[in-house]
Image 1 (cartoon, rainbow, N blue to C red):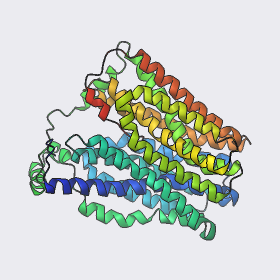
Image 2: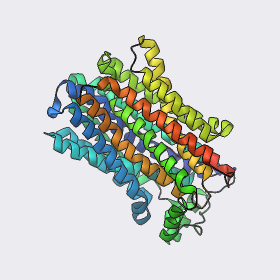
Image 3: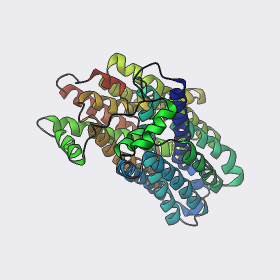
Length: 441
């Protein structure tokens, strides 16, 4: 799209169309991601499928392991078949996988369903981010990505209400049937979402790209600077040259702790709060407040980083997150607990974003995408470990240690990102990197 701020009415309509469709797709992504944590207290209480606390943690990790596979393969697949087809395929996959969970008669089939859902979820988010970034020009890419990520947390809020309204009267399977509803959205997405202009030009489909650009009065993107596979591997090697290796590893460790915290809390928050003595209704209200905090945090994180610096905000955010998560293990008046959960959501859900912003700031322009992508990928191992850790603690009768363990993960990320920032030398090559905030997906 044209870099000119004076976009035509047709160009604005195209941007709104793409962002709107991607927002709905990410909403369904968030619903499917958070639904397991929302129904888990009921499943454990009723011994659904014979699930034990240890198995529940494993099942939570299956989805995040699937997300790791989906995230790492999404770019390669999108380069082959196109971003639009990949998005359609991802929504179809996680919807059908939810149907498999709904009809499962045992833990093995349910686990397969969650793993397949994770693959779809992990592939959708980076593809949707790339899609909206492709059509959001005029210096608004960061804002557009921030708006897109509010859909993920809106899906988390929706999952709590689905569980609250359906699980007790109808049963846990009903929640997963709701997650099949996005299949109805697939034909709409396939018909109305335009293909990425960058993909069309890169594949030599220039006539199709010109027709789309002409219809909406936008400019064709310049793809002459696209990296080859060899260039991308060279950029990865560059992250370890000289003294850069220690900084790279510190960023990866910080990302590991951050995503361990994000997905550990997202999976186990309702169950751990039930263990603290709150009823199911209150436990699900915590999910709503946590994700409302995530929406607010996503909208303020960029401004804070622009003013005070992304590394500093990242360290402070993780410190505040650790305090908030630890306080959840302390019995407090309900109103105070609601406030702590909300504020923890504000800081936790944007603390990881600040890691990506820091990496983006410190990387050179030609290696920035590689640096951020691999930092995200290494962090996904933490996303797998977090749900498993919570399940093991609960299985051993140490559920009250869950919040403490997650708080320690926040402290570790604070330390790693702080050391990495102190060791960094030189100024970022491009100050506009401050605007390039990437989300936690």
